[in-house]
Image 1 (cartoon, rainbow, N blue to C red):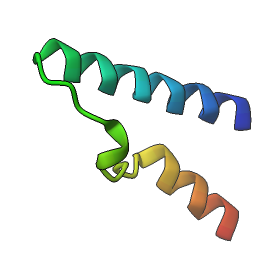
Image 2: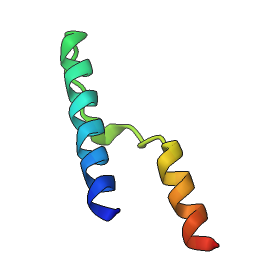
Image 3: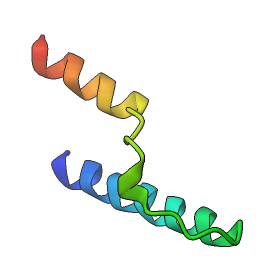
Length: 49
């Protein structure tokens, strides 16, 4: 399950980079706080339970 999460995070980073470049604006993704995905919230809930 950890491998799937890592792949999802990498995919999200790639998508963010592409969208920033498509808009013609170079943006540093580190400047923005990563929004928490539903998957992350579900995983945290499972760890607490």
